[in-house]
Length: 163
Image (spheres, rainbow, N blue to C red):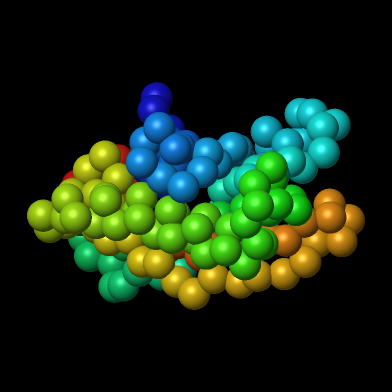
């Protein structure tokens, strides 16, 4: 059996953000992981470690006989440790990381051609919500939390498939 639709969308988001590299036309290389990837190692958080985590799912609209709609928010946290070997200010690095994430998601939004045309034909829409910034003194990093919400639907009796 394949993974649930929400897991397939999560895997798509991780893969899409992994494409943020200087070779791919972006300002930096993000080191994208899921939370459990960090639990497997005792290594400290490094510069540009980007964690993609689930947030609480939201109701995406009235259910029909053929569709159950969901909005799955994600928190995309990037750790910016010092200047990361660059001469750039932390603020400039924050702006570049945020803009690269928005650019990559924008590339996907450009392909929109109707329902289920995004995220490998799994999603209906991607919403980029306002980010948050804070200092993580334990990891000696500035954190940028980008909020991304992806709307999708599933069969109302089987979240592993779509109608």
